[in-house]
Length: 297
Image (cartoon, rainbow, N blue to C red; front, side, top):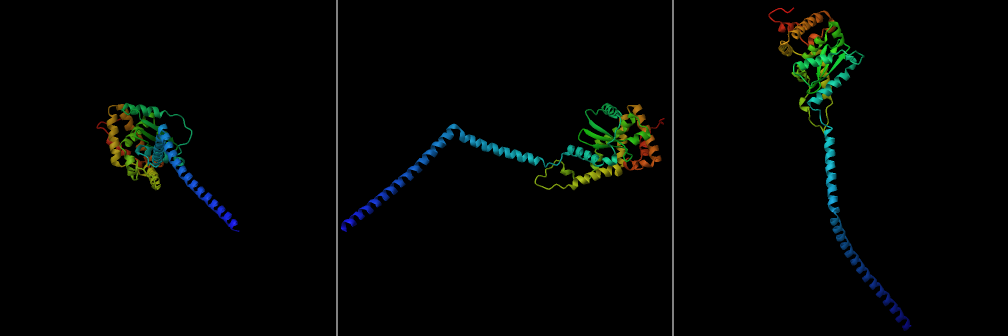
């Protein structure tokens, strides 16, 4: 019995000894692994630095940041309100498209040669490299008009029924276009279009743009082209400018004078053009402003 107890005691002692040794070995391994991890990290860091990979990662991070900034800048620019020149071109073309049915500019027509004649007249008076488009419309709703389309660009409208009714020559039409051109140069039309001009060139990123601004501009276009037109003071200024320009060439001056005598008689007899006087006040007064002391035949 005593022998059995002694054997059991030895077995327990042996098991406890093994357990203690295992724990001691486990602690030693854990410490050694941690030490190796530190050593390995330092070695990896040195390798990265030696190979330039560390600085490469930093450069990539900087590049990504720069790309994000550029993308944001490009996206922000999409919300720019058009600049002055872009705005007028956009609005004039939009107005023409929206009023296509009324103006009836989409119809087959021959080449009238007005572009070439008008270009020559512009250059004769020193206006070179000026871009323009002449849109012939098949309606009496409008006789002639110029719309702004940029710093050195305009859109001119001519009525085919008006041209034919008065039997206007290319010289006559070029003179009318020159008059309209001078009105644009004075910015009479641009000044009368009703909208907040401080919006031009501004940015509305992360803001809500009021679409009513565009609708208001288009309504103002229609009001000016069809009903309101220009004032007596503005008409007088343009007539005097034309008088000054053409005086050096009696033939052209005489053609301009006779043109307005023809227009004056025509609008008094044809009710289709009763609105002409609202847009271009009193051709009769223009004749008086132009009339020289000697009678012109």
